[in-house]
Length: 421
Image 1 (tube, rainbow, N blue to C red):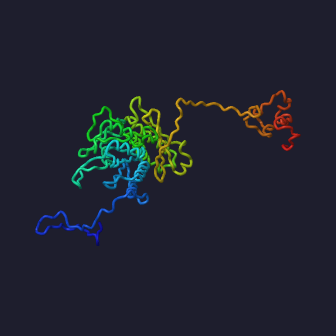
Image 2: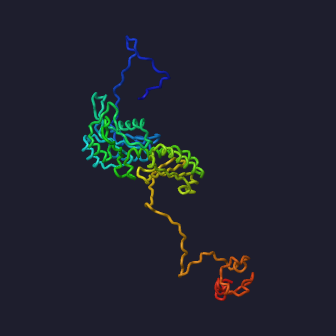
Image 3: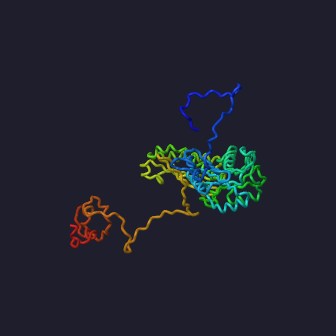
């Protein structure tokens, strides 16, 4: 909308229909406007410099899910949008909700299309099938992408089941008025779950056990647990909370006392989660590790005002951890995954004294050798090198006496090494 002329200071008077006492609801308008040209993949990706498209979400706090709807009813997003959106979610520690293409009408179509898509990421997940809802513009039921409905179902699930708790997963149920485009059987659900696709239901299915929600990692993540959607969500929530709660360290990076303060704050937060059962209950409970000391913060880091903190979170597999390096500085905060190097089970350390190096068959004398002046004029004769007393003349023990035999044994014959005198 463009305003022609100066903007009025007061709202205009109500418009009355001629011959009536009631204001009319609409006024005539020019029909020369349009919605613009159809969106393309470049419009969805946008520009990082101008902050358009996907990059308009860079400054959003607490970004949990990213949904990229199709640009048109008859078109799906391209592979370029999918790759850029996945990288964006990985950098901002969010999860991408991927829409199944419109051509996937049956379970077999979804399985075949997933093999052809060859897409793997622990920062994305997919649900099948698409949803069917009433189209108010066309006045009939139409098929729609399901990413928005899936994000709403997860948010609704969080209202009665906290993602911090280590409870088993529940089925993803659509709200009333929206139903799956295809009813899935128990066998269909098992096939989809085995390939990392989560089934959608309109009503709770009567199955003995609910399968765990999956990501699209499909074996390409850091470990087997990266394919579990609930664990991945909890992991991102924990590290995002620690990062946002310790941003005060950006301005105190040159103080070494920041290290124990930051470690205590992060450790206290993790202890509270452990008490609520986020890392297991009873005998299955595991502990977390927080390291922020001189082993990962160098003198140069202190000089530059940079603080590093290593956070290790347990995985569902006993004895395995996933570690993250949190870095605070004046320019901002970063968080990246680091790969641990675990020792083999049963490894033991033994501290032993190193043997003396042997030169020409004789052990090297590592005792610091004294100078000639110290040997001749030192006031403490007990610090002299041990020499067999039988080889010395009696007058050699007298203080401040020059003993040529001792000099010869220590430094060679003076006649041959006259350069020393």
